[in-house]
Length: 262
Image 1: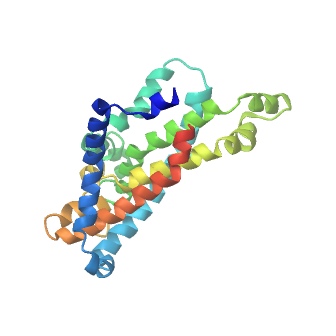
Image 2: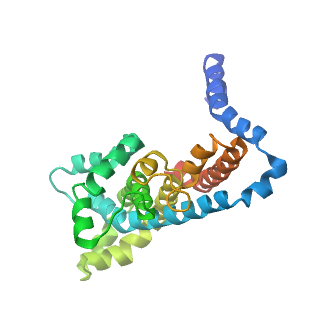
Image 3: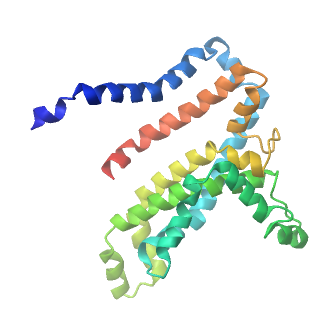
């Protein structure tokens, strides 16, 4: 049986190799074309550093927002029974399949100055989210939150609910049981979801450029800087792409064991 499993028929091996080459060759092309001799100097360019700092800041803030609202949402989906739970779960995962540009348009219709909520925010508090750094955070959180919710919900479903029930019999309230029992149990899932959420936020492009624009130093994150650099300086675009590639590979390497175990 083991010999049968390890022997790959040519009918499967050839398309498998072709699929691997299709995925890997563009990455090798990026490494091959990279301006290695001028790489250190280009990494110190003000535009690249500004885009990198803004991307790290906004991705971190977006992840924090997702943690605050996404973990409770995942708990509700995993533990609570209520009508329409399947519909809610489907709505939570919509940003995964929704084109990011469409997400940006939807955010404009809700949080724009004439939007469903944005008009009230502007007239009441003087808050305008579109084309601001805060707008970048909102756009990134919108597209990245499903990664966190799905990861945490999976961890909650895998955790033994009897510990929470035992805590309840000892007089612990729902919040106490969640904080002292449930949260430590699902901490690895929360951490994995937060890292995936952060990585998705770091690479967000479509919703960001639609909702927040592409203003250097204010809303121009690394993916947007790559897009702009393609029209002006190809080597700068390659350097920015390499930075994003390094981050992505690092995250995949760090979380691979967790995915396999799941």
